[in-house]
Picture 1: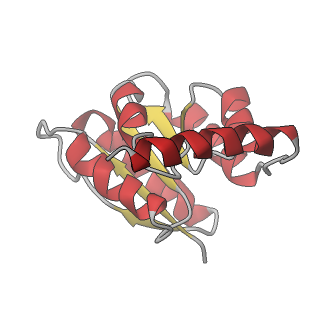
Picture 2 (picture 1 turned 180 degrees about the horizontal axis):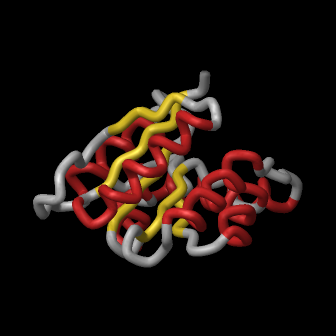
Length: 152
């Protein structure tokens, strides 16, 4: 059973909990990395551990949820090898995987309803990276990551 990590801040907790239930129902093992209350928290405190796990290859994919998804997506994309895609509909969820090989799906818990979020997740999970010209583009991004990392 494939593990998929999932984390949120307080604004995304309700959707995160629903997606955990959905992942289990379709045969995945969700790894709940918090948050588990509605008390206000700082989204980096929950996004960082998940993005680190994906970055080092400890887990192959993850899901991040915050109010709009913007903060989590900015944060996650700071990590080498992470391709976090903020999606708001089924088409962008499909393209996130097929064209960008996104390994983190980011959803705005205050933007997207549970039903569409489940459809986006299902689409992203079942989509396949097309490679080809899209791989060439990802290779260019990887080169930028190397250059930026070397500057440290």
